[in-house]
Length: 266
Ligand code: DGL
Image (cartoon, rainbow, N blue to C red; front, side):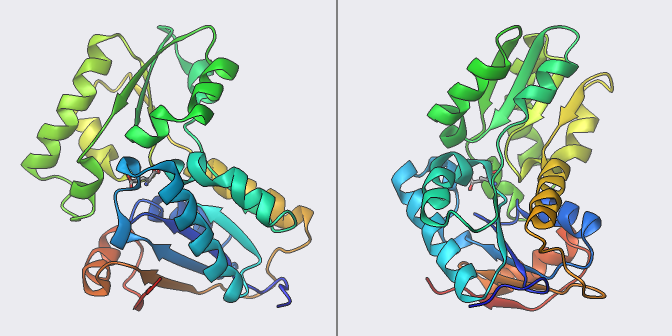
């Protein structure tokens, strides 16, 4: 299928987390039409095997290609470490943006020389993350903290609940005790916890996430391929492999408006 300038961009995550990236893409590139799949039927990716996630990445990519998407954004750190290399090999000419924890900017920002990383178990255990540390964190101490259970609570949409506050504090406290002045939000769900985090950590601590950088990278790639949209305003369509009703309920809280949500059957 021909993929012209006004073809959409495919974006996916295991759930609502990628909406934090979708928001940045929409802000920077309001003329682009966006297709978003929340793979809620298989959440959390962070506790699945790399092989399982790699297969989900292929399923998502095939779906977006059938829809005529001109580019793909993996709006998920866990899916990127497991699946991006395979997707790049399968579709060498398709513009593709993945994401990984922002180790490089965090290492540049820290004054104490101690950086914390909140991410999924899958991301922190990956060879790709180890390579990132080797490459960019040789001169700083990095304290990693997997956060099992957090993504599931974020998916409820109640971002200030006592349960989420208690779980998050248990993950953040060790980073503060270790002297971190910079904390990487290494999972796309976590930027939605910024208000709660700001309430529990000193203002002097820098929080870093990569949504805006991903949007800029998409802009660069589309421009390089001469694929930036010429439409007046892009539209956004949503699918989920979980309950469309649940997703429809949470969407107005995390996205600017309530849109139609279809069931993604694969
Ligand atoms: N939002 C995803 C990420 O950025 C993962 C969440 C999950 O464990 O499903 O890593």
